[in-house]
Image (cartoon, rainbow, N blue to C red; front, top):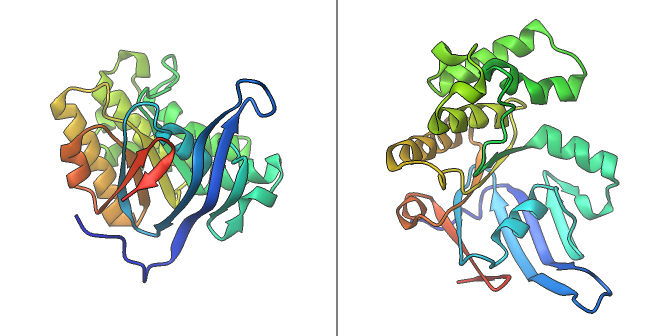
Amino acid sequence: MKAPNTLKEPLVQLKAVRKAFNIGAAIETEVLHGIDLTLFKGDFCAVMGPSGSGKSTLLNIMGLLDRPTSGQLQVCNSETTELNDTALTHLRGHTIGFVFQYHHLLTAFTALENVMLPMMAAHGFATPAMRIRAQELIASVGLSAWENNRAGNMSGGQQQRISIARALAMNPQLLLADEPTGNLDSQSADGVFELLRKFNREHNTTVLFVTHNAQFARRCDSLIQVVDGMVVP
């Protein structure tokens, strides 16, 4: 496993990032304790750590789904702690893709419709170009024959492949994957991992991959270990 190349351009930078919940209450809890971290363009990085260590909280902050309590967070050359909610939503929608352990597809919608959703949300309506883009992405994950099938009629592995296609719909610079193989059998899990790796290599997409699978972690370029809300060597 190689260390990140510091000659690359930084894509995400966290400086002294802390996150606490129930601030001011008797049960206030700090989950992240001064995280310093840099992701570079083109990185393919694993995140590992015990359950409850703060991995998902860290991912949510990097994905602009939550704000840090203190510290600085820069994403794609934007200092996000100074942005309002509207600006954060725009930055997130145009630069970050998400793949979760549970695919969160709309099961009554077809695979094609699910992949088109981020583009429709960004532009307000569907266009022929969006349909073509969605078809290309579905083909790239090997499911062209399923594009008109409802997501609810697909296997778990197929649904996760469609969720990856959906995450890439806006051509994000950063792809955050939170245990995307956790609910899959070994063969399907390996296929999902290889898909993420494929897009990383072909499009220079930065991928941050949370996993409990040590074999997958060893196949990544670098590893971030989170223990008790801190990044450890």
